[in-house]
Image 1 (cartoon, one colour):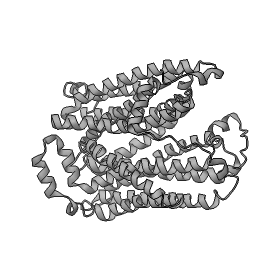
Image 2: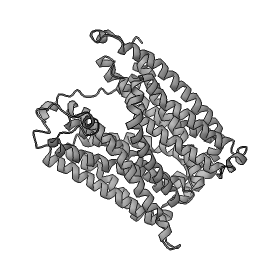
Image 3: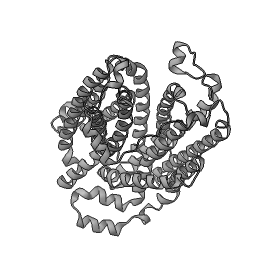
Image 4: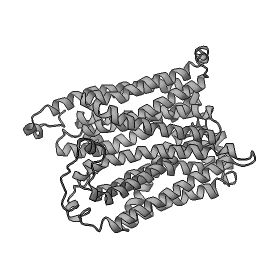
Amino acid sequence: MAQDVKPEFSKWRAIFWPVHGYELKKVLPMFLMFFFISFNYTILRDTKDTLVVTSKAGAEAIPFLKFWGTLPAAVIFMLIYSKMSNMLTKENLFYATIAPFLIFFGLFATVFYPNRDALQLDTLANFLTTALPEGAHGLVESIRAWHYSVFYILSELWGSAVLSLLFWQFANDITKVSEAKRVYALFAIGANLALIVSGEAIVRVSDIRRFLPPDVDAWQQTLNWLMGMIVVAGVGTVAVYAWINRNVLTDARFYSPAELKAKKPKTKMSIGESFMFLARSPYILCLATIVIAYGISINLVEVTWKKQVGLQFPNANDYSTFMGRFSQTTGIVTILMSLFVGANAIRKGWGFAALITPVVLLITGAGFFSFIIWRDSLGALIASFGMTPLWMAVVFGWAQNVMSKSAKYTLFDPTKEMAYIPLDPESKVKGKAAIDVVGARLGKSGGSLIQQVLMLTCGSLAAITPYIAVILFAIIAVWIIAVLMLDKKFTALTAVKPSETTKVEIVSG
């Protein structure tokens, strides 16, 4: 890699496989490593929801777990990770970070779940039931089944700690920009293939109930298989990582520290500094609004939808089977959208492509909430199609989640990154840092906080559904306005002559 070779590919190979033969030694292991991590991510995402939604806690627990569990755990993780990074080599840091996840998931199936009743904090939970309002039911049951909560939190952290941090930090450390432009898109394909494969794996092992005697705990058997696959794929990740360190990073064609050490580190900003920068830059403020709006919107719909799925499939195996099919479908639709929609939409203009995601959320969200809120009035009409109102709500929610996630991967993420391109160097660095701090946190926790306040006020997830619908549409409206405003600014900046681009002052708006 010391001397980058100019790629010379045919038109179709440049699109689907822009890799030189000699690069396979590096690209294939990286692809496999990313596949394993994404495979685990999908299984953990679907399994954590199955455990919580089909338990006594129900979907009402999710907002509490995300806000009071995942958010503090992420902060604690980063503090520990930062401390360990000063004590260990990069390679040992990777092993020390991923090992606790694999150990816990292995123990959950073999120790925690089989002894779940004995491990419950019933005394504390019963006291909290009498002391807290009815709307805190999800919080109380999360404390009672603390082992389920820990599983949920660690499953959430897998995405940020292993996928976002460990893998992409490693990839960015050993990959030049010229290589990244060609091969990073292949990793996205690997993630979607992992969605399809892991979805099928979930369906297969969740459907095991049909082949077991009535007195056998089918969900226990399913968990054994799922956590076994998690551990195997995790060990595979570690093995590939070790192989790359021994056989790729010692090859000067693929890794030259002297060429990569000059990379400029990302600017880190405090929350206060991030808000100040956003306030001074209307362009970055619009971009942050888009990121926050997506995070809140998808959170509001997902929790309500998962409640409906839990009502339709109260059995853990059935719920898990459904979520496996959901993950499979998401992977297939995302690949199809990437091939036939993504590039074509972006060619029509940044604003056109950026508007597709909120419009998709608006249309599918309207259909989804309509069937929930007015299900009794629509009963006769829905019955004429041979469906129940609950199943219709599940189907609309399924379509909404599939389409919104596919639109995110295909259009939302690319247009968001494109919006940074016309900025001056300082605004690029500080803007991304501000959005990473403010946008990521508010987007992930904002929806959960809204749901918590409403549930504590109104008593249940079902009671707050109409309010959630109104808030969702209001947030999407703000999102669309932010896209239209940003499109004007983006168009103005990209219309400036290249020689004059650096003269544009972003902070002034």
